[in-house]
Image (cartoon, rainbow, N blue to C red; front, side, top):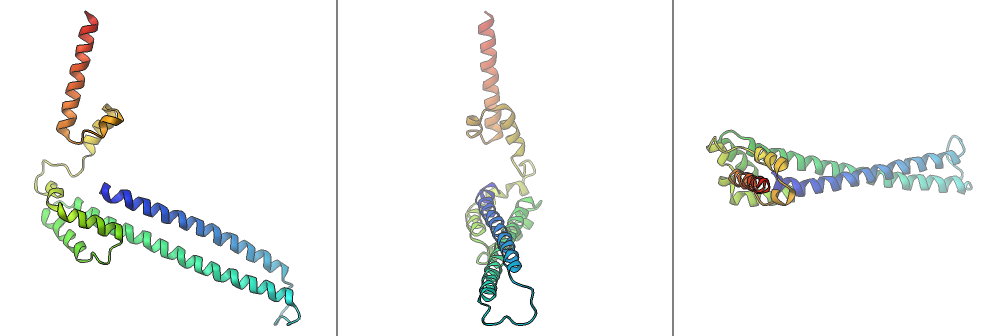
Length: 194
């Protein structure tokens, strides 16, 4: 899931940033429209052709309203894209959360059958996952294999410095490193004591 989340989160953050920028632009343009409306005199009926100032202001307002409409459309499009990314991300995470191999494979095959409809990031992830799907779903067959490596990561976080965290990624490797650290510590204490 981390292989999917890293590029996906970048894309979602980028879209979220664009949405905020569009919202700011829309708000500024709405304020500008309100300012322009205060310049127009409150008269009923059509404006006279000789009143060029009012006609010019109304054209400006119309132009800004069209820009706002386009920006709102773009904002909706970006929100829809984020929603789609998250929808398929949740479907992919269900594969790994499955308790049975058969259920996991059924969910995976459903996604593979829809691969042309998926966003590019999800599509690329599924193509890479397809090569090693059996290996990644071993936790559904063997109960001794944990679903996540959170326990091992906790050991890295509390006991090892950053450079070592990147080297050891298995429980066996972590235990070996702890033992060697303890041996070194004991040798240091004994040698210093003499």
